[in-house]
Image (cartoon, rainbow, N blue to C red; front, top):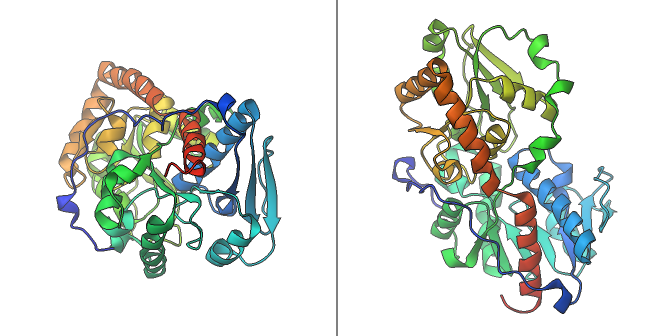
Length: 388
């Protein structure tokens, strides 16, 4: 997949999520029976794995309510949630990509659901969710090995799979530009927000432990180059003069090429990975979330922040305007002065901040894990019925 100059990325409009595929009456059809690629349960939880976990959990609820069964396969002895309608099965043969490509296809002949970008290329009766085209849009952000795997497998998957899904209209357009698939053949089933209500900030001691004494802006993201954390760090001195700190969480996945940030300024705190309760506490206590990415397939932290009452300042590129709608302040990712002005506006006006909190809480209602999970069940039923 060819690289693309980021300055030519199209601006997505602020639109609601796509409707799920047309529903088919469960009372008029046979109960669903299919398999799920559970490799995501062996991986660290980033946005992609969060998507797979939540979609699977809500599919489990829907199968329990509507009838149907599924088997989830995963390599090794990794732990899995206690599903009710989904049976968990483990295979000790191979690991990683080798397990996915060589072992998984032999374990179950039923229709296969893959929720984390890849699936076995030998299978045709499967759905593959490809979350973004970031590896094509910003290849320098990824390791050579990661680019090689995706560059080889994704074109094969989109040619063979029964259906390809993704998480935003922007992402669907980018996948169609870089892969041999038409935009109209990609189904958009976005992220949801309901998971944040399981988080409990009262169980966290992170803010008292680290003695947060000044207002802070918050960034969630790895040090991958497309996350653009370096731009925010350029504002450290100016924010320090305003009495504002910068708090950064997230680590460095092996799939990303490292971006070094140098010695942090006194008002910058790198917290590394934090658990969900700590994340809730940090979001609820922040002046705002900053989301300065050059490109994203969706931008799940935006929705998480809005759901927890944290205002958002986001990049105006890629999928972010589509996700934010009118519920966030937007700024070009290469214009730090605009970000500083937005931060100052929120810091100086409780009224403005409250307005964005209210708009954000309304905005997240458009994004539902349950709705997207039902979309997958409808799509599986369609494809199994030969309506691909």
